[in-house]
Length: 264
Image (cartoon, rainbow, N blue to C red):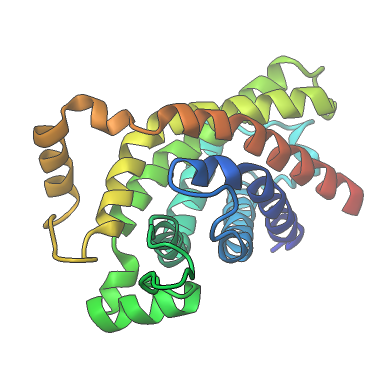
């Protein structure tokens, strides 16, 4: 099993996070709030995504990353490989993502004289507190929504990227830097347009349990949210998600492609 894809995914994920984290947190509080924890965790999860995707394609087509320009896999195989990477990354990501969401939504004032102490003092304290108060399942809260978000959308993500690269690259050649940037950016846009409704539900389920349980599960969260706030609630944050998606995924794919070319 080639490991270069895992390492390239790790590094490219970290670079993408550094660029995109301010967009991810501006909707809550502070540009780089809680960044150190996701920097490590997202890099790990991104390595799972790209590593599983590439190795699934290898199993389906018997062609390595370098051979895929000369012998391009079908879009069906690309979609299946992307979905496989998506579902595995979702369950790896779930505890880290829950902690990130809890920390970003923590609005207690920082250490000021007379101000109450924050509920969570950091990622480790947050994880321990959730485990103690909500049990092991508390750390996986929202994982179903995360899997539903990431499985089809990451299949679409890789299909969009490959389609644009093939359309604007002569057959058998590697895509140019500008093509990779554009393809990666539009792949991010396409995936987030589909993913945002699931992301809204995921975040609400992850915050659920801080005081008392408001939702009985994924469907209940969706129904309650719709009844209380209408259809528009499922597209809350779409503007920021898409604004973040283009540059982050452009840089992620560019660094991923060039790292693999450099190593080989």
